[in-house]
Amino acid sequence: MQKRDDLNFNEFEEILKKRLEQIEENIVQLRSELDSVGTDDGINDMEDLASLHSLSEKDNTILHRQENEREETIHALGKIKNGTFGICEKSSEPIPLERLRVNPIARTKVGL
Image (cartoon, rainbow, N blue to C red; front, side, top):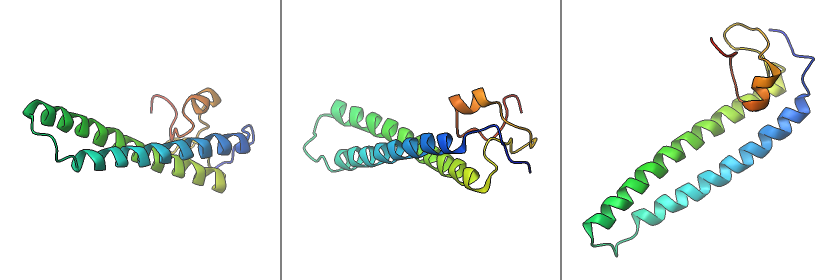
């Protein structure tokens, strides 16, 4: 697999590390919110319980997405380290710079 010489790997590494830091903060906050919802014994109203359950489901969905994004970000950082960042995992062709700027965790070119 080829290595990209037209990318500033340091720039993307910095972007991804900042993104990872924010994601990890989000995960901590979401887990805290979910823990507090699970321990609120003072709710007796069925509507409030239903509302909390709905919020809990939404938080769980967001948490799952954040955990997935964290894994994808870690994967992209690993690709920077091994020199394969910016290479499509399906076609082995370069991923367009514009796509990487919008989505630095992209694994493939658009349309594959």
